[in-house]
Image 1 (spheres, helix red, strand yellow):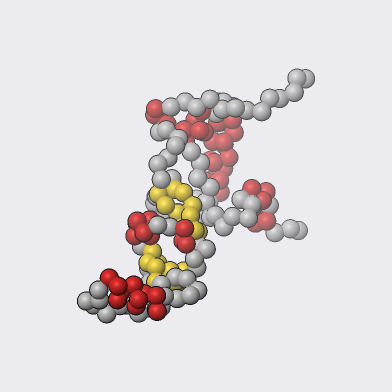
Image 2: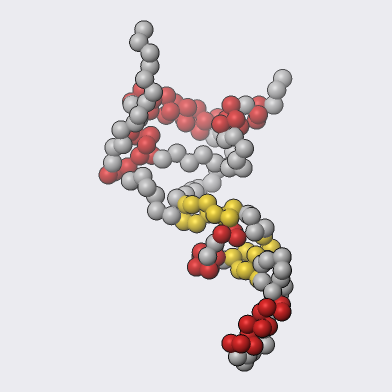
Length: 155
């Protein structure tokens, strides 16, 4: 017997490390009624199958864009609590003139580039992070979005 966790759902998630599938209500409500009936039946079956385990009270879901840490600008880093350290933990002495500060920075800058930290932990410059973004799909009370379903061949 094969591992039940390695089935079609695992394949649908592909190579992502996502632990959740977020389904947009506006789009689901815009699907044909027959599709909605099948979807509701599957969701009810899933809910009933796991009534015996503790579930979270709620989830927080927000639209976002994906960025690598090294591509973030100063404002974005601040928004996500990411700090950038070019000087291996050293800080310049206070009171340096602009010229002396530039000289200090040139002498102390890490030739391998900056080190990034988030929540006090070092993170890789290529780590992908999420920046909150506006959701391009309107709220379900304000929109019907016509689906473009594949045509079925004539019988």
